Amino acid sequence: MRLAQTLLWLCQTPSFIGDERPLCDAVAARLSTLSLAAPVRRFGDSLVVPLSRDTGGPKIALIGHLDVVRTEHEHAPRIEGDRLYGPGAADMKSGLTLMLDLAERPERPRVDLTLVFYAREEGPYAENELGVVLDEDPELSRVDFAIALEPSDNKLQLGCSGSVHAKVRFQGRTAHSARPWQGDNAIHKAAGLLARLGALEPERVSIDDLEWAHVTSATMASGGRGRNVIPDQFELNLNRRFGPDRDLERVQQELLALVAGEAEVEFIDLSPAAPPLRHHPLVEALAASGVHAVEPKQAWTDVARFARLGVPAVNFGPGTQAQAHQKNEWTSLSGLALGQRILRRFLEHAEAR
Image 1 (tube, helix red, strand yellow):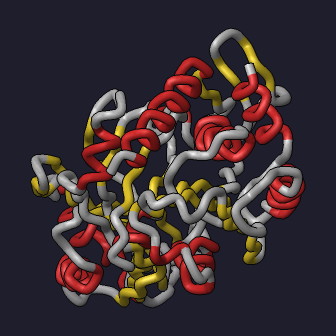
Image 2 (cartoon, helix red, strand yellow):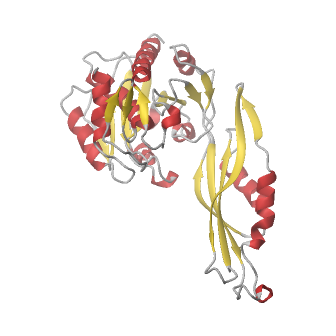
Image 3 (cartoon, rainbow, N blue to C red):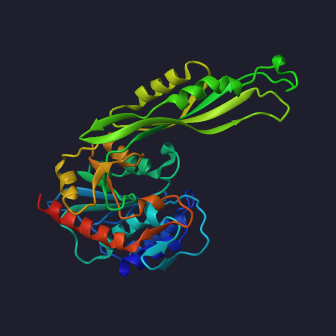
């Protein structure tokens, strides 16, 4: 099965976040043997591939990130029955496989198709190389439609949640733990905020008959100087996930209100949400191409970058979503083949528009 061999090839080249260059070089070399509409454009460890042009059809971009998270794998990439095991097999080298499959077929879809292989998606918003590519590439920011081939079990996932991370620092004063009244315990000062966080219920919002949940969680904590020292500093990481009804400024104000002036707040990672655009013609065409379901994306993805440019974008990919970031990650090969059929059918639908 050609798809399986391509995915295995991708998984056999390590590309942990920050170390994408070997895979970027390998993909560039593989593409260099093909007939393309224009030369590949490279930005750092990211590639923009003009696959077809001047077709008279819509301008469509397929995007996929080269990097994977640093998960644990007990064996080398391999195929066992319907499963292919390897770092990034689901997230998202399965999506990259469909992109390479389209590039390596002799026939071209009758749409102006661009493939984007990019680096640093799994890290902070500001370090993601897709931002650089969109800023510097002359064509990409003007496409009519973009599909992020994130793992979704061949479901169409619309829009995306936004994400804000904030460092919340409580300040106190050290003392010997035998005489705590001589100090000011920074950890204890966080009790009020932690109680408010524990009492929060998800706030739900419906857009285009799709539901998102607004949630806020403490995800990391650090502080203290020793077992017998009253801590003078305590730091929490707060992560706010929010639906497309809110912008970054409003969410930051909500977090400040939650902290209520009890601590210093530093916003360290700001990722906007994206609307679902369920009734856009190309979204409807993809929804009618055999996807398993249409649902909201309760997570952040790079469709938000396109949304900020006014470009409709969605999430659809063949990867096994529950395997993303898992130990001994795997994806379903039958799901990969189904994703190939859905994507081809969508491109045929798009040609007719």
